[in-house]
Image (spheres, rainbow over the protein chains, first blue to last red):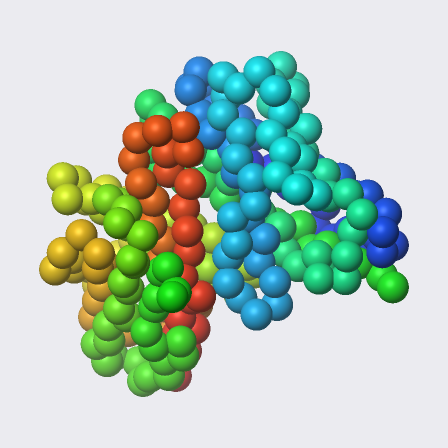
Length: 115
Length: 115
């Protein structure tokens, strides 16, 4: 079964607007971490933001914030004030602490920022 | 200074050959990983390794083997290359323990093309 689901294969957003990239996950491990990575066309994987399952507050890193809804098992990435350089693939990932401890990545969402 | 470096960036080779991809990290991390990203951008973990334990994804053929001469290096050896091995291979590293345990930092990737 898919552990990480990203239902939006592609998204468009106007420059300077905010955009939300969806991520839902499936786990029975009470202790896990959620991550978002960015992969621009140049190919490298860039860490953006992290949320622990026990964190009480949503994570924020600059223009990135993670909308963590534990009961719904969702961890959506919000990018505020989009920039042209935000155009990239975005991957949601999860690490379960107790079950295998491996990282699982979602299929990704391709974000295109329009001028 | 590049935190996680892989060489070569591109690798073109014939079916049946044996090849290696090198990975080095200068972050002082204790765990390293290899991932395979296929043509649909799906990213799948192949190995995770620290100085205590090698965890192998059971779906990885035994033609693939990680070799770690020391904590800062994890090389990937591939024997008898097949057409289906064509992909981008990413090395990553992380540090266990602490709040941001296992946030992974990736290399730039090695694009392997098997002809």
